[in-house]
Length: 154
Length: 192
Image (cartoon, rainbow over all chains, first blue to last red; front, side):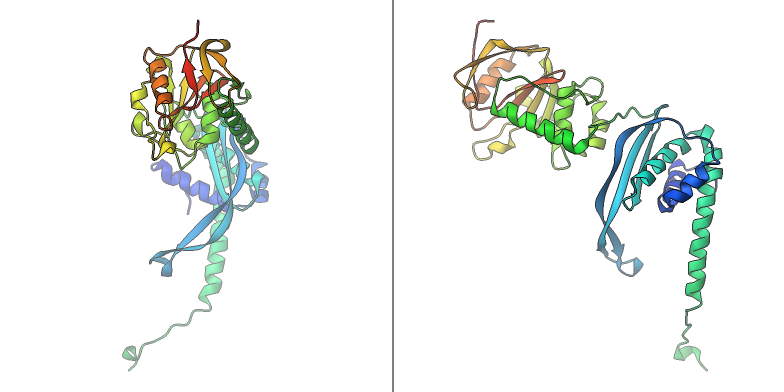
């Protein structure tokens, strides 16, 4: 779960909000931004651009790495007027999503804006994503079959 | 607070445009060309050198520059490697008198392509005075004035030409202007 008080390890907190923003849809983010403080002005360091990235997995989750397949990734970097730089990398080809994600990444690094933006945007998104993940896990759990070994049977 | 600035406004078109300009400059040595003024170079670096590095440098080449502010900018926009020393760089960026030809990588007869491309920032460029240049790409002779070079640079450039095909190639940069001097060009003294 993402907690807004996790400032102790700045990098870890930033990784968490970037992950939540990357997984969210543009519509969700924009709806939440309507009731959040306005994002500051910015200039583009790197306009949204889409490329391909090879996604790699591990055999069985823990073994040798292998190439799973290529996915389109869109990235964007912005610089706020106060000098803070925000980056975005997200699967998909949505340029507007990458742009708002980079703007949020920059704004969330500002202690003055962090509290309100994380409460209004990131925490609700994280809660929704966690609820979706829980629902999927619950559905999968109903299909689990528990096997007993012969040794366990009397 | 990061000092990182933007790169090309239109990465694909601007890079192709600058590449074509450098190609043209190398093909017509001594003719002054200029990059479009859309690149905001990092402090201490001229816009021509910055634009040329943005267009030509990538993850497959190494760059050396004495400008500390330029390294994060190049790493972000060009994705290039940085040489540990000037003599290991594929692209050597230097300022005026700081350039030491002995410290740049020369190609050999067997591997002329190993020669570095030197981007040398100078105080002034002018056609019609200074050196007399002749050779491939030049119809007869052209004159080129370059201001702000160190004492040994002119002799080093003559030596560079004498050792053709070994040696290095030079691009003199002054603000947004630049002139290419490939190792194939013969440099003669001219009345200054």
